[in-house]
Length: 174
Image (cartoon, rainbow, N blue to C red; front, side, top):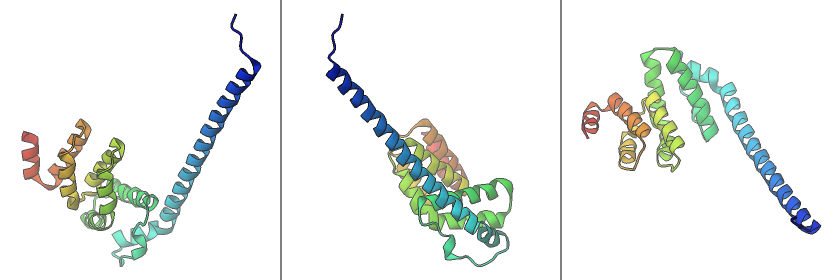
């Protein structure tokens, strides 16, 4: 029969409780961060959805308050743009979205393309294709030089087919 001292068992239980409390604290902090992110995004959507509609459809003047200043606001802009692009086919709206994305969202996606995490790079590639951000072609070509996955390769082909047919032909022949 195995003999364990009571002090050893109490130490083990205390150690496991500390680990459990640490995990609970970590989850609580992460949930609070996520909640703040969602509140900022939702506040942006609530405050500026009408301004976006007026700018894109009623040709109102562009307001600098529409420019996102953080990642949560960028996600809000992405939600607005993807909704319009999927539900409405209007060349003027698509051009205005592309111009805005090229000018104000470029730095966010350029940073994401150089991220080590595959999921962040893939999301950036999806948004580049959806928003038709042709000014990020050089960054996409730099990404191509790295060791990339088959999914990233496919998404790059899709982007090249939109913007640069000769690059698509060269890339496809390799």
